[in-house]
Amino acid sequence: MMIETLPPLTELLVMLGALLVAGAGAGFIAGLLGIGGGIIIVPALYQVFSVLEVPADVRMHVAVGTSLATIVATGFRSARAHHRRGAVDLELLKQWLIPIIAGAVAGSVISDLVTGATLTAVFAVVALGIALQMTVVRPEARLVDRLPGQPVRSLMATVIGMIATMMGIGGGMLTVPTLRLCNYPTRNAVATASAVGFLIAVPATLGFIVAGWQTPGVPPLSLGYVNLLGFAIIAPVTVTIAPLGARVAHTIPQTALRVLFGIFLLVASGRLLYGSFVA
Image (cartoon, rainbow, N blue to C red):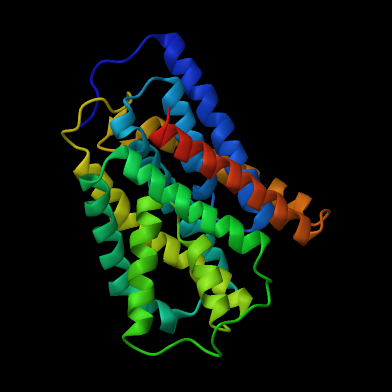
């Protein structure tokens, strides 16, 4: 529920500054690598809420819920831009619509049932897998020649929706490599993944609001597990800074970018695992 009592002004200013930095970093990385910012926003918010001494049992839930809320805005903007270029596979989206939403709802329910440490571990382990995929697996690697038929295709969407929701990401980091391993055109995979991210974020955000409605200990200005201050700051900052990252991307070799980001994910996932089970 919404917190009615506000903390001291100094604490709000610290939170404001930290959220600005997190949003700028997420936007820059998103533009630099062409990925959703959730993979950056979640660990950044986790650290911000740690500094603000948000209780450990709700810290990751709020980080994930707030990240999903920002993806509603950024995912819609990105999907619309790709759709205008005719790159979004509308037929695949129609087939995935119900499974994606079902996965997002399931992810919201599971996230509310598990502890903060478990949710953090899920993010860290999957982020570790993504890091390995980016640094070890060759970009041209394929598992099959084409997308599988039903019911495997719907099962893929459900799993993507569930894991993406539990991680607080738009799904691009899961959708794009999954489609590429099925010999799907990269351009269409990226465009379609942006729409998938929006489809995941809307029900997932609502789920995190409902799940955290009566939960004590959430940060100030929160609606359930969604921090409204974090959303109001991160969403516009991310969208504003992303073009800068895109411009820089054209001056740096893509292989180097993938390796650097993979290293970042290795460090971030390791830090989250340590914070969950040791600290």
